[in-house]
Structures are given as structure tokens and as C-alpha cells.
Length: 325
Picture 1 (spheres, rainbow, N blue to C red):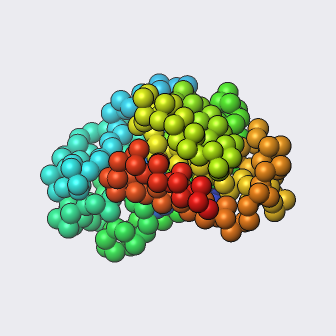
Picture 2 (tube, rainbow, N blue to C red; picture 1 turned 120 degrees about the vertical axis):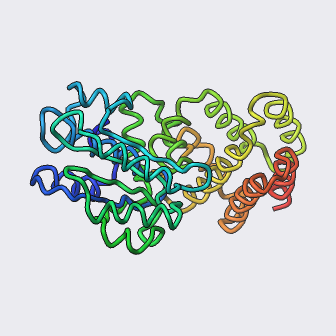
């Protein structure tokens, strides 16, 4: 994992690579941004570059140190995740004990604290003392959804590295370069919060099947929705696809958005690009407001599933609502 493998986040990568080139490495960083934006992957890339035996502003991916980082067994890289709902003081104390031992080499020790915003007050205070007098050379990387989510005392002692929501175009290009089907890649990056999650979706057979079901149902005339509902029962709730109704509904929202794109001359932004001709012919059967309402109905049904409404009921009500306009 190197910076070259991370889609987007040019500002964050530029800041870190400048530090590597100049040799001015801070003792603590805060990677702040939404989940799925590549914070963890970038932390590993930064650690890999610090450990890399060839030096430079990115890991080579080939030396022994880089391979150890990639395999998750580098002795000087420590990753702390919440124990239950929070990062606890016992975890910070154990980390301090680990870092007090002599480094496996002559270089850096790196520790990554995921979900740093969940640290208990005691854990935060214990870490604060460690940050104020860090053993050299140790680099801390705290990961949180926003700068204000961590304790102010910790924020003041870290260098902020901001992350933004994933760049969809960059992620799509990356997935296509990896050999993922373009249509699946485009759909996946619109649903997943980051590259790793999008890659996982694009590789799943059920995701391709769900996309096909959306096309079949979406092409049904609204007056025939009772038949479509029967089709959904057969294709979804009698198969393993029943576990992914929320994804189906989110794809439906994108299908209806494509209708709006066709009506407003933004065909290049369509997710269902292979259906562009059909969509262009049928988009004008309803108003933009009606399609926007259908989008909201799909997203509302997906939210209801997250609120523990039975998926079959949520889907049935969604189809009825869309049929009624």
C-alpha cells in the first residue's frame, strides 16, 4: 500500500509527502475526515514510506519492511482499535509499554489509533502525557471523523491532515484500471463511502444481480407494478439477494436520478449509462418533481430498513408509493 494506490485525497497526500521529502516529520498527526475517505489506507501508506528501506516520499512496496507493513506484521507498527465502544486507558498503557522497548531497527516506530474520538477521558489524558514527551523517533497517527471530535488538548498537539469524501471519478478510474467492469465500478463508487468499500461491492456477484433487478423493475411501466412486485418476490426474497434490499433501494434512487439527468442534459453523469437510450425515451413520462419524489421514496424505504422495518414490507410500500406517483 502506497500513496500511489490511494484515489483522490491529493491535499492530504501532498502534505505527507512533502514532510517525507523535507525530513520534517511531526511526532503526531490527526487524520480527520469521513469514514471511507481513505484515512486508514493513507496512514498505512505513510507508515510504509517511513519504514521503507529505499527512502523517498512513497513506499517501494518491494523491500522487506514494505512487505511487512502490507502483511500487517511489521514489529514497529501498532494499530489500536476501540475495545468495544471506546479506546480505553489500558490500551494506551499497553501501547506505551510496547513503544518503550527498543525499535526492531534504527528507524521510526509508528502507532495508529483508529476512532480516536472514542477515547475515554482517562485514555486521552494518558496519551496526552505521551504526546508531550514522545520517545524519539515515534510517530502517532490519530484517525477521527472531524478535528473537533477529539479532545482539544490532543488536537493542539497534532498536525491536522484533512480528508474529504472520496473523489468518485478518481475511484472509478482506479477500479477500472484494476479490471473491474466499468458499469459496476460507476455504481459502486456512488454507493460506497470509499475506494476499499467500492472495490468490495464491484467484486460481488450479488451486486451485479441487484443492479440487473433494478433495471428490470425500473423499466416496468408504473401501471404494471403489481407484476413487478411479484417479480421482486421471486428474484429477491427467495434468494440470497434478500440480504441486500437496502442496496437495491439506493440503486433505485440513482435510477430515478438518471431520469432527471436525461431531462436536464447531463447524460455523462448517469450511473446506468448502458440504459441511456431507454431512459432518454421514457424520462419525460413524468416531471422532474415526480422523479425527485421517487428518489426520496427509495431513500426513505432504505432508511426504514435501517430502522428495522422488514425489508419485504419496505420494498412493497416503496413500489406502491412510486406507482401512485
